[in-house]
Length: 227
Image 1 (cartoon, one colour):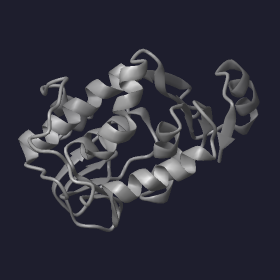
Image 2 (image 1 turned 180 degrees about the vertical axis):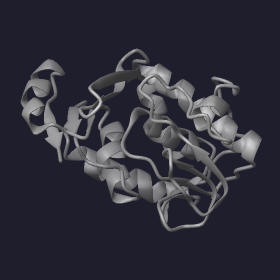
Image 3 (image 1 turned 90 degrees about the horizontal axis):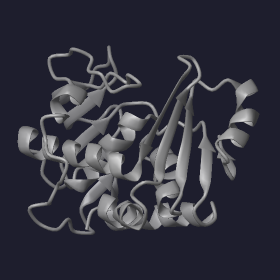
């Protein structure tokens, strides 16, 4: 099974309405929350888009060159669901997803707007506009093997083991306030996958205003902080 099926699907089945990620951008003054069910829809659309439109097969590199964001969460889960290997900057990829103005060495470079409401960027290959045409359900054509590369140089089995190791330090079902960026691979493991492995939810803050964090810990009822 894929990283997504192992670490995320059990959370979806247990409580689809529970928040998965609540994203704040303090510079823009925005807040967006995705439930597990909504994140699953974005992930399924992404997996279908990568496989059916761009021929991504298990082990193929997909560069995720975005900041920690609710759009990034759906992209990561979708990439793993179809068996892709998530890579970072400086690696050649079959598909790369970049922020507006970003560049990458890839066969296909798609732009993610990072708009709070999910509006497209108007790019020739627009991640948000393109994935909307794809289905809300995804079924792999064949099971993803545990030996398939999944994150940097690590396999599915290795990524899951590392995520569970980090997740065990967070306690059961934590609500985590985080300012960590999701660099590949360490930031993705510690700032995103560890929270999934612990059965928790994430309050991710971009461009954090230090003066607001204490109030946000109270209002969002977080149990611990990363970063």
